[in-house]
Amino acid sequence: MVAPRWAAAGLLVIALGAGVVPAPAGPIDDKLIPLERYATPKARALGSAHQPHLYKYSEHIYGCLPWLDVQKASIGFQRPKFAEGDDRYFSTWIIVDQKDDPEFAKIPQARRMSAMFSRFGMDLMRRMATVHDVVTDDNVSGFSVVTSWLKPGSLAPGGQPVNESIAVFVDKKSALDYMEKRITAADLTTKARWLAFDGQKELPNLPLEIWDDFFMASFKVPNYEPPPGITC
Amino acid sequence: MRRGVIGSTFVLLAATIASGCATSEEWAEWRSHSSHFASGQHATFSLKNREGTAPRVARSDIEAARSENWWGKAITVSPDQIFQN
Image (tube, rainbow over the protein chains, first blue to last red):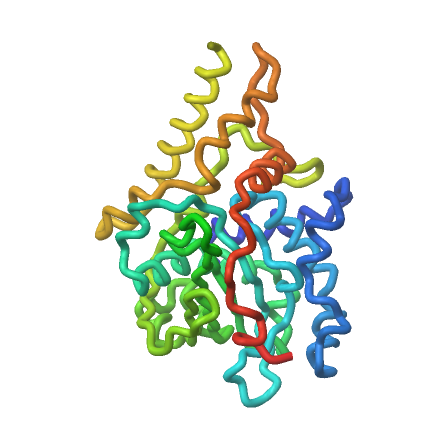
């Protein structure tokens, strides 16, 4: 049983599709991986079968989490670079919209990675876990979220800004066990796999720590009104 | 004047909510990291609203603020460094 707050979020996701006024198509449609981009029959079948669910999920993020941007063509069923077989992970790539903050810059890079995933990436995984038809599909191996944000201090005049990114992959059972409190965040860390990047430079062996952070569950933009037809 | 008050209230409210909702007790810096978006531009949302009415922030306002504060294309990991098709 998924925790009540996330079950409620799931109901919202489901409700989004019920006779609503469609939000602008572009910002939602272009976040889904186009079917023609999948290289294997398994991936294409997943993408095709779950396209309506992915659309509703994308619509939910667009309407309810406006402080996040979703990378184009990133919602779908990705195969990690390290996978030997055709393991497909329900995936999302988010870009956290935040200013260049000196306090954030003081935090060591590895800690920033852990914090940004714990706060934003894990929340997305929880929301993904409410997309029932996808989660119960045996061909879906797990969840992956790529979280990117502006590297602090990279806005020097004349330079090109740099994003830091952390891509985390968790098998389905371990993710659900954590969300349903059968294992701890520390346990989840031992079961996750991740790739960390400073710009395009991979940071091998970067330690990741995951902890409970429910900021996203309560944060609201004051006076924000979701697009017509979307209830958050 | 009224617009300024509304704008200031908006920013303060956002900061208060953000800092109040963070959960990590072991990490003061992270708790105090309350900023989403490029700060300050939030205030422009309320300026678009008529005086005497409750301010409203639409998704399009956020997109506009994001565009105004876009700092250029950032160097970011490419998908093929993470995934295979």
